[in-house]
Image (cartoon, rainbow, N blue to C red; front, side):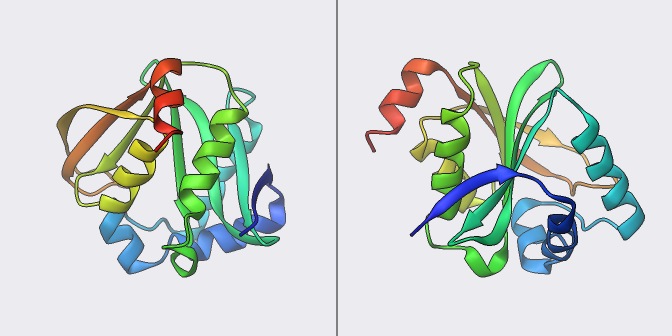
Length: 163
């Protein structure tokens, strides 16, 4: 298996757009697919924001998803999306590990819908610690759900990589 990260290219965006239309993936992540205009406006903001590190996840040189580090609610966060056709291969776990290697900023925070068992496993495998849960109301982009809250400190990361 060969997973690597590279900067997002404009040619990746149509792939990302199609990926976020997948019904099963959206249900698991408690997300709603965006329309074309909203999707491309969001990615335009992401790519222009110097505070965001957005990468394309490649699996054997094929676009398999995206991953980014960004500020949200005064916390440095990580988020990712792996295309449905690439699930179950360890790609998300490896992509998170690689992204964590590219930033020494800690702590890093993450969230996952409590129904997203795969993402919970990816994050804990990479040393993230569950710090609690919270109710998250419905928005134009997210479904109402219970979110699991995660935090990664430098010491916790080294323990997680031993798993």
